[in-house]
Length: 322
Ligand SMILES: NC(=O)c1ccc[n+]([C@@H]2O[C@H](COP(=O)([O-])OP(=O)(O)OC[C@H]3O[C@@H](n4cnc5c(N)ncnc54)[C@H](OP(=O)(O)O)[C@@H]3O)[C@@H](O)[C@H]2O)c1
Image (tube, rainbow, N blue to C red; front, side, top):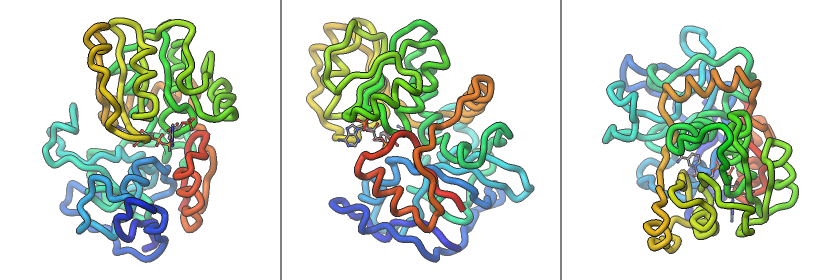
């Protein structure tokens, strides 16, 4: 079958390891797994980390990329794939499974005509969402849902700062936050992305590092080194910084004094649970929310999508269609 895959880990020039071509048919390890016909699959920054070899042992390559997708299962049901791989007994907290992994990392991913997935990690695709929209949800929207509502426990009327507003995760945070009645502030390096943030529901958009009108209740942080100090400066005493990524570097100065002096909470997030995915889909349908699709490509032209992602030239999600 055809697939988009990383031929080898390539830390310095990840796009040179990207390939489109023949890969073996998926092999479900047991009857608890099924094989999906993939219809649409969103790109995530995670796919770039995997091209770089980040956290993936070199013996796993060549490795089919792709964390998220929507498709049709072996019973003909249209479904969305959670993207995390974990045992049934860890439904409440997948990261507690010592063997948990992601599609496109520990198992062949979703950028293929077919993908093997555990049956218990599938949910029905709401008919209100197109395949393109449904295939662009679990890698970023689910994380955004968990960041805002489960971890930060934000209530309507509270103020949230979203750092680096253009990407898949941040546009989801803005759209979800707005629909939930939060006051959303965002930062972005680029003028057109600050305009996009306002279009998607941000009340105000700032250049990175700008002083804010007042401290916020919570900061959504995925940029890492370039914004970490600003995030800690921007949150009110007793507020929280929710961390889901480190695009520009994972080891900024910690500024521990600011954390204990202001009793800040730093909370990590890794994807979300299946229950949160179901709640997210209900919320999206109720509020007519859809991922902002920046560009879509036939899978064979996916390299252009990867180039845009690597250059940080995105305003929402990039999706590959089969
Ligand atoms: N923990 C989890 O479950 C989880 C889930 C999803 C994503 N993540 C992580 O969150 C991060 C964002 O993921 P994504 O898929 O939304 O990525 P993306 O679409 O590529 O977006 C990258 C984001 O980073 C911002 N950014 C700021 N400085 C940047 C720089 N120097 N280079 C590139 N981007 C820069 C961009 O904002 P502007 O261009 O507007 O400034 C943009 O919003 C990644 O690190 C990813 O691994 C983690």
